[in-house]
Amino acid sequence: MSEIQIMQYHPLELEARDAHGQYLLHSQTEIRFVLREVLNKGCMLTVYFDMGQSFFLTSLLEVTPNGIVLDYGSDESVNHRALHAQSLICTTSVDRVKVQFALPGVRTIQFEGRSAFVSALPDELLRLQRREYFRVSTPIAKPLCCDVPIVVDNEPFLLQLPLLDISAGGFGLMANTDQVGFFNPGRVFEDCVLPLPDTAPIHLNMRVRNVFEVTNRVGSRYIRAGCEYLNLPGLPLNHIQRYITHLERERKARENGLE
Image (cartoon, rainbow, N blue to C red):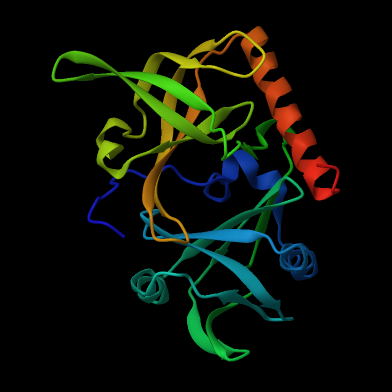
């Protein structure tokens, strides 16, 4: 990871027990069932630790009656820090249902001839089924960009930032690492413009909810800023939901070999 420090951390849904307690599973049988779904469908997991300031991408390699095996991350320095973390939170989605669970720690083993992490089964697992908050990834080849007005040295400036994903509640923006200072959690941006296809541009206000530095598989780094809409009227929200539905149909068509 770079030397950029992200000092604030917005808790994941698993940590908001008052709001999401009804979605928690405590039965070890049910937890193993969900984890085997994650394993069988090859879902990628993001594992957060150090209060969300560090994370790595991984996947499940095995689910046993008493534990799980996770693939090693691509960054050895991050792997080393993960081994010393007292708590890690794993998040993924299965069939558009968000899944999160906490691990008390991990240790390293050799699994089928390669290094891996092993941990005990989580004591509880969040299976969040509120469909209105499902996020879909936006196209990579022709990225959708949001115009975000900022002020630099008392001069107005416009950032055009690609969307990584979008939901009916907000979206994730991709920014350069040197732009992290613009996206402190809690900051509000007004008069942003989201140019959706086949409709008039949507003007909206948004608040930054969380910020993470991401390292992709080829080693490139960028900032993901998770933002929520503020008091978005019904008609623009309908346009966003229609766009999400369109993306979902395209995804399912690709999975079924129709495109």
